Length: 235
Ligand code: CDP
Image (cartoon, rainbow, N blue to C red; front, side, top):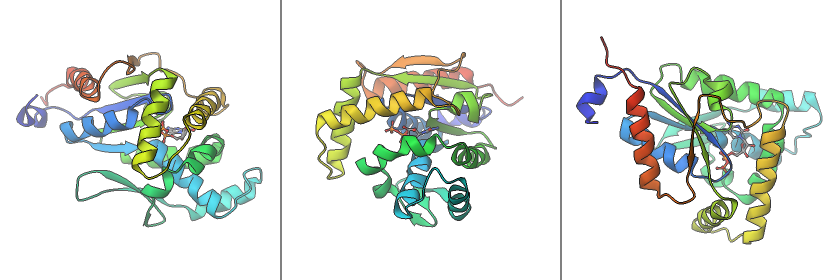
């Protein structure tokens, strides 16, 4: 759809959920760019909280300590000069810290804390108030924006996901054994799908996309096709 035609359409919310490292963020980023929408990586927000908890040695079993930490944390998203959304923790760019394996190893425990989720969901909803947003995560179509016009559930074979994640880590100068990456993805999938609060489940009305055998361009084209199909013109 041309930019001109997109401008004549009401903005929608695109919610992308799914397993770890199945291409949600890469797809969401590109889709947001094409549609001229805001992109929000909700996983990055949980990773930023994890960085804070690790740096401040927060005891996650102590509710008072967790509450105090949350009142001291401000997670925000800013658009960089290249048009990419970056995550900030208390005013500092946290992008390189949040992608580290050390953070991936702890994030599922921290994202399972109810108070952490309440704080992040509030911020996510604020960002989506005006629609025109693509957000990816685990509970976007089920909890954050159950009214989203388009809901997608991405998945892919474990080994393919592990190879992709290992390559991403390498691009950030972190060499991680493939078995360790596999173990981490398995652990997070298990933890994220079985936790009590907002577990990762497919929303009833979400469309499944298996990215095992398709390229990023194919993924993006498919999501754009589905998204534009949900748009209605201003009357
Ligand atoms: O990119 P990757 O698939 O590795 O994960 P992520 O999207 O960065 O999310 C990191 C972790 O944050 C997940 O394993 C979940 O534990 C948690 N998360 C969540 O609980 N809810 C969300 N909406 C997004 C992420």
